[in-house]
Image 1: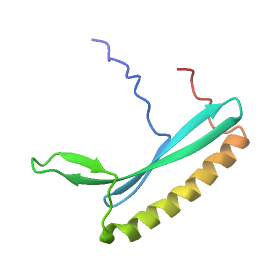
Image 2: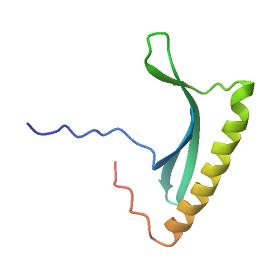
Image 3: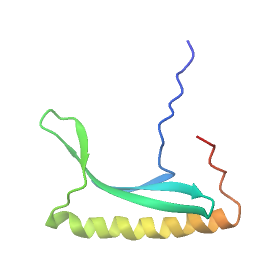
Image 4: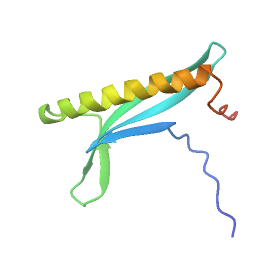
Length: 93
């Protein structure tokens, strides 16, 4: 049986430290490529299923800053690779 292809858009990369995760999204337009980032905190709900939230408590903020710093560095690396033509071209939707 053939495996079904998913058309779900996925991030270029993810940066994760503990329960804090950043997803790096690649965007393209006539003006070029840029990257956006979404941040989330992962946790288990009452039924034990993994879920996420964009809310961060006091005790999450330092870890959030560390993830944001690492993600910033990675986005700069991706931009440099993009400008050097080292990243594959995103397929048309």
